[in-house]
Image 1 (cartoon, rainbow, N blue to C red):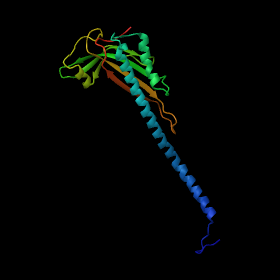
Image 2: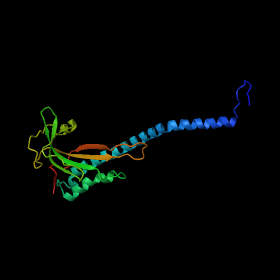
Image 3: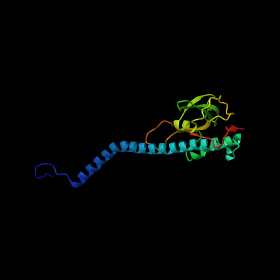
Image 4: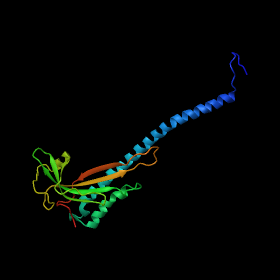
Length: 207
């Protein structure tokens, strides 16, 4: 059919067919970007949630070790230590925790005249995936921890057998592999650590 201006007149059905084709093209162009954006949202949400679990795991390890059985005896058994090191596996559930690395260390704290503190490792333990910190390794200690020991500076050798000031360091590392994404993402290691002041007066020993 010829329209009023001499141009071919297209039927409404043909116009709708072209509109559907255009929509299909637009969808094909937009869908990959939409899927990528949604994957980024999923990835960020998973990473945030797992990082919170890693933080809780490190806090739990340091907190329970610092309680030393909560019996004021300042000793824990090897079986109890293994249980402490296994708690992050439970906390990370339902995520696969077979690759989680857990370390707990006891640091003797030396407070300098200017108020800064250094922690020297005098005992360290780890699960099968972790590596204990070397004895006598020195780590910087948060100023707030140094303030807790102000006025009682100590220069004793780090042997965990004296009445020196000391803290417990809990560390957890987790190889996080996100799932359900549109694109492949390599494993990212999530890590957190926390320092606790023990609840008992003498250094904690593992028997």
